Image 1 (cartoon, rainbow, N blue to C red):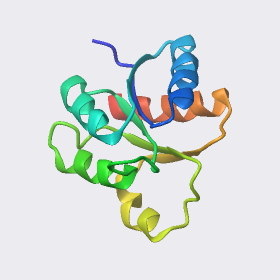
Image 2: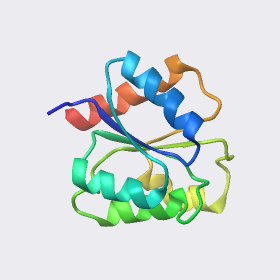
Image 3: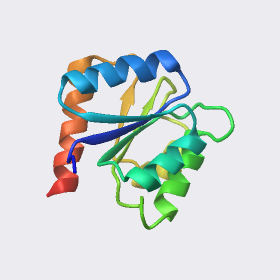
Image 4: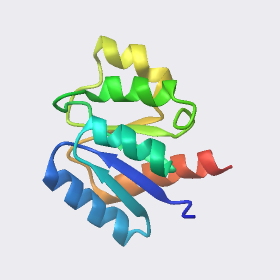
Length: 126
């Protein structure tokens, strides 16, 4: 079983593809979900080591996905990094900040993305 399995939940196909390429090149195994519902299913069935979660998605937004992940005993301990173009100064950010491990703002550099992911995967594996 890989200790570097990352689930990317984002509704933008280009973001999924480019982020997956960066992660694959850096030695990670990826899972991708085009919406929050698919992301929740994959998180429970595959139990990744880390989740990159977009906030603004149709159907179910990232905050609601985060709440469901943290309510589920199977997925509650998986580190979650909010991965979004949205500003982080909203009431929801304050409300959910204790459930989020970090934030990455789009656009991002590949080096910054990998640095943040490695930091949180190492913490969760210790």
